[in-house]
Length: 99
Image 1 (spheres, rainbow, N blue to C red):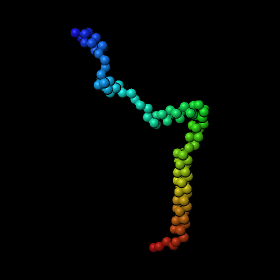
Image 2 (image 1 turned 180 degrees about the vertical axis):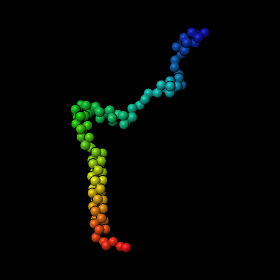
Image 3 (image 1 turned 90 degrees about the vertical axis):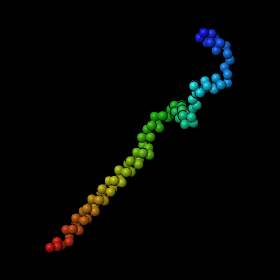
Image 4 (image 1 turned 60 degrees about the vertical axis):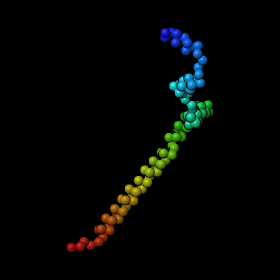
């Protein structure tokens, strides 16, 4: 019986509903714009031979500059803090001690 059903199913043309169900079971994955752009960019870098050069310059990029500026700012703050502490200590020594 199963063999007859299988043979009958093989001869029967696929209906529109069967096609839709088949597509839902095995959907074709569309490439997104971001994926396509990423692929195109990678291919361009490879074709132009600029991948290594971009990596080198990325190391000296925005994030690194911001971190450097943050370190400079912190160092400047610490120097100013030390100067203020010196000034307070000098002012305290000049004032007569109260009893």
